[in-house]
Image 1 (cartoon, rainbow, N blue to C red):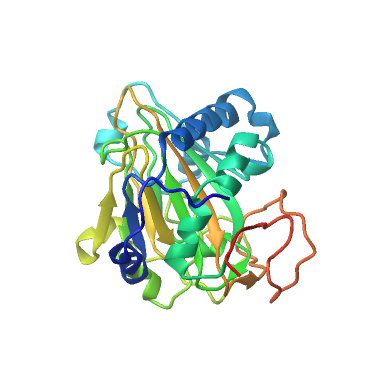
Image 2 (image 1 turned 60 degrees about the horizontal axis):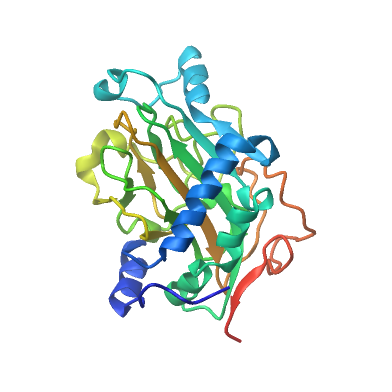
Length: 303
């Protein structure tokens, strides 16, 4: 793990992360890391996909849900797009690709988590790799990350990094400011629709979780921050922050991205029956255990 950032993180940025639940750190990663990420994403999605533990074709999922009469998020401009792109997702890419693994464990991202959390140690939890090809119609429905993880604690974040210039038209990330402080746990969804996974028969119901409000249909009622990004930027959000993104309306540019997940001092293992299958997670942890193990390695330790 290295702490060599392209620039220092400011106290104002630390405060923004803690108050709003999200901060865009502009120009903090060097071009070498961005180039490595671009190579890694091309490999895992288009060269060696059969090696990854979890793969979702969300465009295919959207079609199946629509055929079953379930409302899929969409809009007229997206429907009017010509050649249709795909919304593809991989989970656990670091277990199958050395370049993803190197970024996860050796880049400055763990140090960034240490600075934002104020924690003594940082563990790496997992990754989610995402591609919205040109003319992808699918939204990423507003959701929180917490119900997809087997974790408990406040110091859990996702670091969203793209090797591409991402605009509002190509699917820039959107965040409901301050929603990490609402004190609620929300049901996970299938990304392309608002329906909770348990309603679709894809997860066990959890009585502690509430359905998300219809943010897409009532955007004016919420303080939504949109973060376009450039290569070298890192967008960091709290795992309880509500976030999502729109289609990639651009006809000639792919929106590639990776979300690397890190945890701090207060985090313990906690099995969530709402979480989708994670076959690459191999450990003997029980509820309440610290997560330090080979599956969730320590990447920063200032003790």
